[in-house]
Image 1 (cartoon, helix red, strand yellow):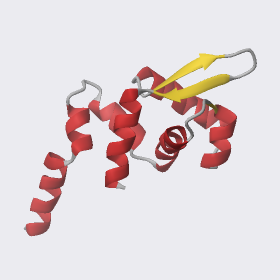
Image 2 (cartoon, rainbow, N blue to C red; image 1 turned 180 degrees about the horizontal axis):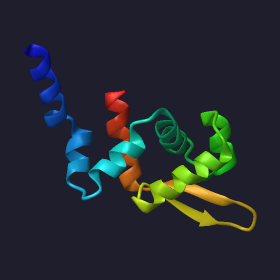
Image 3 (cartoon, rainbow, N blue to C red; image 1 turned 120 degrees about the vertical axis):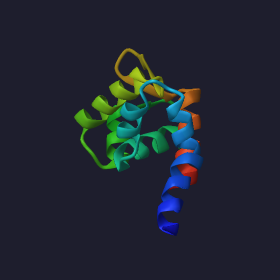
Image 4 (spheres, rainbow, N blue to C red; image 1 turned 90 degrees about the vertical axis):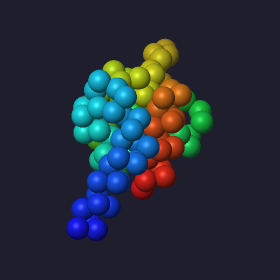
Length: 109
């Protein structure tokens, strides 16, 4: 019984859940973020203050380039990252919304 109350209070008091419930795409964003690779992508962008590109992130997160580009496209759709095409590379930056989400996730993990 106490364990059930703990689970319920986690979901009602968790700041990430509260933040995402205010958005209409709550379930889509939750599905996207609560895995290791999306967390590592956000972490890399958060701590690497210069512009990053997909190949570098893929190497740091130990996953394929194609997977990172798909994640970036989804995160860009939800406003967590923004991309900018340069002459040779597509640079990826974390938005303010992405920074807030990562800070909340960092408290949970």
